[in-house]
Image 1 (cartoon, protein in one colour):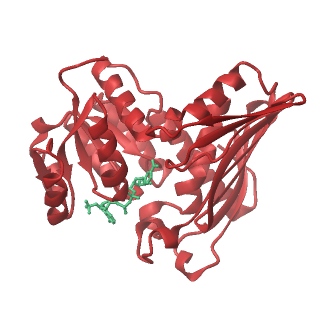
Image 2 (cartoon, helix red, strand yellow):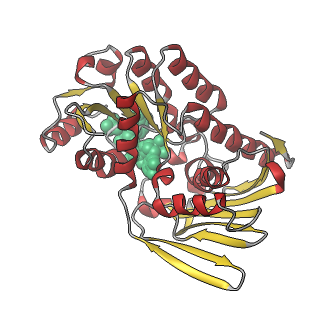
Length: 341
Ligand code: NDP
């Protein structure tokens, strides 16, 4: 789609992901531009604005909620800590704006449901920012699964791990604060193997079981420094997912079926060149995929949906399934029982 009028975004929360990934992606794309910055830190907002020629306004959170400069943007990108997504989505919906909200959409099933309901009431589009849906290696794996390359899928293995305190050396960071994050390894990282398994299998979870553990003092406020969970899909396909916020950085996902296997490795970090490993019968091949800017594709897709008034694929209901599933994982870990989703 070509248009003279790109979708104008208000970027809400100027954290590292917004500044280093989302804003450059918007600048590189054709269908989007950043016109408004919404931040609790006025000095930072002004300095980011000075580096971004398209920005017309900077707003505090209160000014945003008061509806100031609301004619300067058509859509919002919400990238605050998880427990701070809903209030911004509510205001944006009241203002009639299209909404792209970071994953996980919120911290509880109730708040995620409220988000979906608010957007329905105000009839505004809501998309949850699952960048793996844009990844060519994952999309190719999905096509192969659809064509029956692995036969019937039997088991999915997926994992995402990182040493969060080396990456963000701040013991007070929101990811380690249960109220702000809603959970640590499973909510922040486990969502990748879970959601990508759903995307690859084109199916939604039936039930889960799992275990979580927080060992180090830094993780005392969250149940899951590490998380391991098993997700049952219809037709006896099972996904075994692992996630850790205190391990070597690594990620992969593979689907093994009655006749073959597809594996994406590395899988979930945006800066990797991906490889798709295929095995079938006696044959084995590896396909290299060059790194693409997943965030650029994601913003362009979302803007295309807004401009053409089509519903985005990863809507609020899609995001809600992950929150229900992950919350069921915490319940399963606490009770030692299998929990239906
Ligand atoms: P950061 O901590 O780097 O940034 C969060 C920003 O939110 C802060 O800089 C701040 O912006 C704002 N904020 C508002 N309220 C608070 C608060 N109480 N405590 C701390 N910050 C607050 O986080 P990330 O950028 O890593 O994550 C933001 C969101 O994006 C999360 O939902 C996360 O899950 C998601 N994310 C998604 C990724 C993906 O691959 N799709 C990758 C990384 C994150 P300001 O100073 O401008 O007010």
